[in-house]
Image 1 (tube, helix red, strand yellow):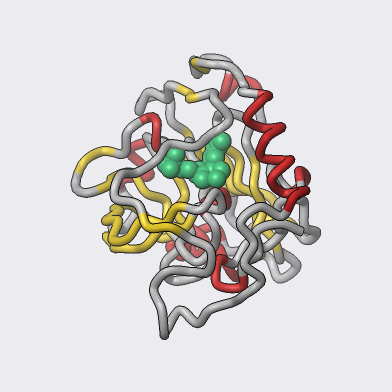
Image 2 (cartoon, helix red, strand yellow):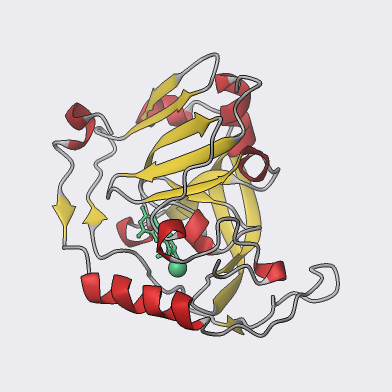
Length: 225
Ligand SMILES: Nc1nc2c(c(=O)[nH]1)N[C@H]1C(S)=C(S)[C@@H](COP(=O)(O)O)O[C@H]1N2
Ligand SMILES: [Mo]
């Protein structure tokens, strides 16, 4: 991350090492694995998940305080047209709404989340990935990273959300802007996103190097691997 962009973003809290260790243990133990898969056209809840009504907060313990005036979003790497957007630039892109379900690998699922923001596809269409671009790494202001195949980020329901249920996304849920990739476990949906990097080679992110699945499809129960 370019230092000049993150220097003046206050980071409250510290990385909760104990929590990180516990989640690594879960991956080693294969916690919650049912050993089954499911078909999303036949059931709504993926295998091993439990439905919740509230919206849990999960992160490393560091919640960046990103003022809208300081927000920057870059799309770079293997793209023909690197983007560097500020808040106004981001809001000037076509705005869309969608309702989707969330599935977190720590077992909870939450139905019918109404997000508003910019479709990942719209951003990619502007940035124009080069033919050799095949993977995406998402970078948060907290230093978090997660990786996914370009095809998953280019899915019609992948978005960069700034609102939830008609209100600005709160800081604890990754505001001002977070990624939402509903087809994958929620750790792939980077909060406080600031940089989207397109690459030829894959690069496992924070949880992916700590025992979590490189792909993370809840219907295939790709929790660990
Ligand atoms: N930048 C950032 N994004 C992140 C995380 C994080 O620690 N930092 N945690 C991930 C995990 S493990 C989950 S389950 C979801 C949780 O999002 P929520 O707190 O809005 O429920 O954010 C994901 N995105
Ligand atoms: Mo998570």
